[in-house]
Image 1 (cartoon, rainbow, N blue to C red):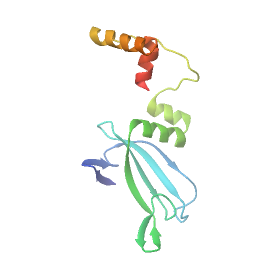
Image 2 (cartoon, rainbow, N blue to C red):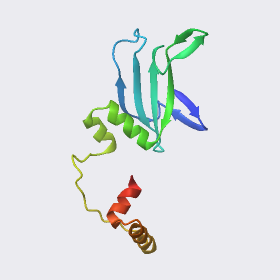
Image 3 (cartoon, one colour):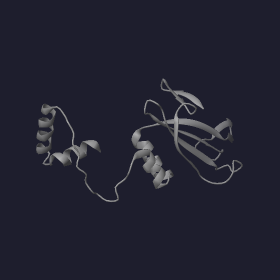
Image 4 (cartoon, rainbow, N blue to C red):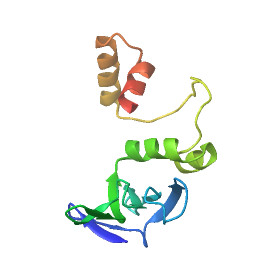
Length: 141
């Protein structure tokens, strides 16, 4: 499927398929639904979904008549991550988004940043009553 949304092209043929989910049953079931997560070459995520007339993908064909349908929905990184967490198994999730710690363990990282930015970050952390590591973690979400 190919669709332009807010001036951007989304194409299931050229994007990389990351993982898929389906509820149950066959396409004869009005509640049957399938969704597939994709990532574009630009790094943008989107979901392609299709389902029967009793799903969120239903399309009105007459006043009181509905049919199955499909659509593409752009997603932020966080929305894609949340969808994958809910719909995919742990191995597939980690294949897409990387390993997840089993606890709140820490890791040591070496980074190189502009000295003025480092001093600015240290001051901001101090003003918030945080350590520099805690402050940087808060910025990363």
